[in-house]
Image (cartoon, rainbow, N blue to C red):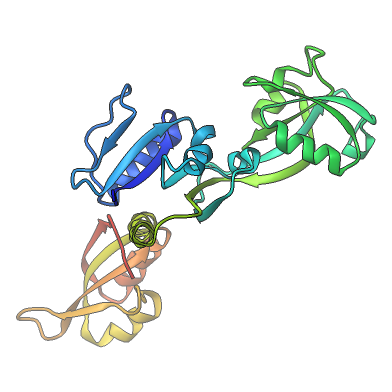
Length: 289
């Protein structure tokens, strides 16, 4: 039996690059990605990357071509394929919304006419939504540029994804309801074998070690020995600072501590006020508590 964990990721775009970099930072170490390459193995042959369209990833899991995959929560909802969401990420956050022309004298979906045409790239979600609110909607599936369709007279409203709303505004559209929130998720096929489940847990731990480290800095400083307790009050670290005696100087010690990136400035200021010096700030690649 092949115990290589097969990971499906988007084949192109900003999300594809972000995930590829995250995997390498987590220690998986793949060969350089080629635009024409559809799959590559990690150097230790424990993992295989499969490059596919983000919209197809749930189907690849369902057909057991891949074991786990990175895609959007909205895509999983649209595909209606049963998968296990094992981790949610805080990047590529967006909302799926109902939008109409700004010129329309409508502020709420209840004001929409009973029979209407809806343009969307998410026909299943859109149909369920309009069925639920009691509107008879003709769903027209559009592959892209959904925002332009109302101004062309193609539809009465759209169901689309937006992160900032800028594209909607530039096309003179306004949001009248939010259907769901979405972000990038890591999902797995439901019947994942036990050995692969164990490998998946280790995989998630490796990802977390990188993501947690991004928000941290490693700080070292010389401080007066009698100020250790004061330092602990503003630099607790993971549990408490590591304290090391300073050679040939019994009155001072060296502290090593991991701090939140956004607290580095105040930490340096506090250290200087208590007589600290020799302060060194380093990046943290991975962190496991």
